Image (tube, rainbow, N blue to C red; front, side):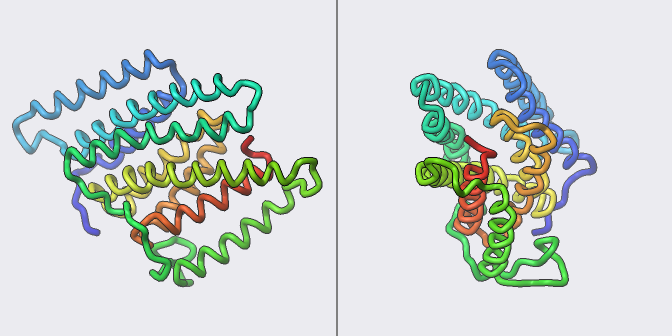
Length: 274
């Protein structure tokens, strides 16, 4: 996909998205609302510029996406806390069920797509048969269909995580139940949000590579509120770029949902989550 952007637009939009996702996680709800008001003023000022030479459509649209993200995150976070408080004393299930509040994060993006009649590029099943390249997804000396690439990747990941899982721990079967429940909810809803809507938007505006970077980096940093450190969040950004690449190559979400699901199961079993 060939998209022409003005100099500096990509960096400006990346900064807007990073600043927004960091701000809403790091500050209070009142300061998040203040950030949202600032985004509204930015959108208004850009819309008031009559000359197309002065108007950056991509920056305006990114500010709109960031505003939707602020609204969605505040709804998601508020209802997630209600669920956790309501299930006090049942920590594992509180965390698992609180992920259902991601529906409220997805909802504003879905409504915006309906109102603008925008058809997200990757809000589809996807195919397992398209080619993916190693090590750079779009280019590389090794190429394979997605299904085989995913099979090899997941074998390697499972092999690595097997050394960090306590297979003899008490109530291991209960932990597997937690893992499957958490992974199913989280993988489906996060993929709808980050690859179905956000990645689709930025690929439409910036092309595959730049759109992948914006969505992938923001996805990784969004994990800070889940208790991960910023360095770990940067590692998740790399995973986010890789998963976004799978969504782009497969032209849909099912392959990357499977990938996300298995990784989340491993995270729970190894103690990284819950």
